[in-house]
Picture 1 (cartoon, protein in one colour):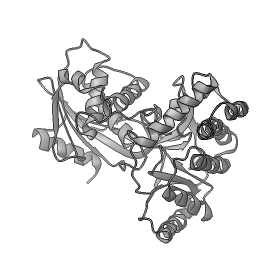
Picture 2: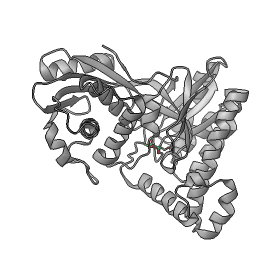
Picture 3: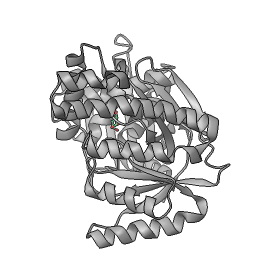
Picture 4: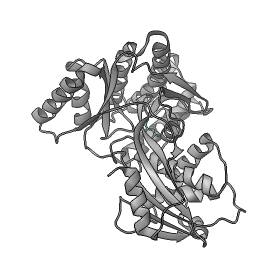
Length: 391
Ligand code: GAF
């Protein structure tokens, strides 16, 4: 059964009725630009064909009731109680999956605090792999914000809805993430990646040229799951903030490769390597946009490989499974490969010829077997459209 049909059925189980509508939003892969978003830098993600569906109807009272395939029990709260639940420090006061949904309702409502709003029933189903670093959370946020935006008659634009999603993630779920994933999901286009300046939130669609060049982006989901509300992600963010402070700048966006010498002098060795990743990664994003535009997708392989090395050696967010995915894909002929997303698990991407999908996939599976790792989940992704109403 499709995720769309599952959302419809789940809604019927919850309410005994058909929903007023079903809205969906995509997950994403990031082509390049990792951990640069919360440093006000540059990223180049694209939305993928995997989507999360929110079947929803307004209610006659002020209660929000949410069901999903992530849990057996629905969660129900009144709209007026949301302010007591969020912002939350650390563990959300409701099951984490529902904090993404309720957090969106809370952050949206905060934009119109005086509006008399009706509650809603919402049923969520998704075919975005969870824990794979493909932004299943941004897909939930985008589907729910799109649904409530229309049902509540708010008419907010895509960038505002992305900011609503980020606020839900940061303040309701308690994950200190940047804005990349929500922007990638909300602004997805079927023919392009989204170049985003995370300081100004200006975007530009950059045609990937994958189809014309008969290329595919292979996702190698290592099945090593990660969570950004915990440990490593938060620590990396703190290192970047420390690095910017020691350089006397607002954020690492304001530093370039010319500043690396001074950085080495004013900070400890670990902070320096974290800073070097961000500074060089920002430059690689700009170089990738230029290469794609001027020379096409076959010209970006080395930049992807350099990005992975920087994350492995300087930012230290890779894991052996991700390194094996990248190395075995490259050895089997990939044009470029790198881990994608926040790291500490999740997925790698490999840019490969269409004709090489089976051979590269087999080689990666074999390398995982040889290393004694659990079998990876491997599939191709294509740039896809942002949120829309499906029914
Ligand atoms: C996760 C976060 F949600 C993003 O904001 C971004 O920081 C990414 O990790 C790393 O580039 O997906």
